[in-house]
Image (tube, rainbow, N blue to C red; front, side, top):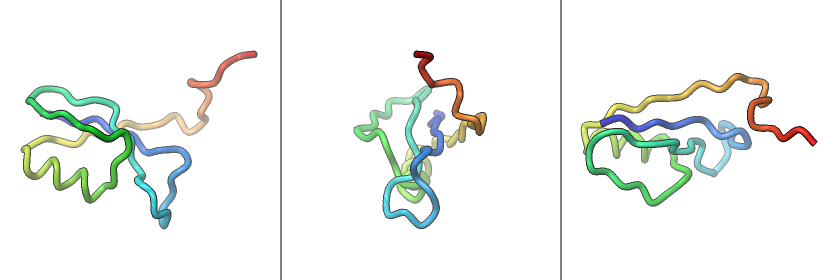
Length: 69
């Protein structure tokens, strides 16, 4: 089983908010009820389910998701 996550844009180190966003889950029978998750919670989920965490990379520009008006 694999859990795909990416780092949120507005979340930085030291914030008291979840830093990662779940993008998808492949394989297994895991249902996540959250969109944003903390790293420690993510590690616990992976440990108990035997899942591998895949951290997706960002392009650093933020240009792919913007609308052209």
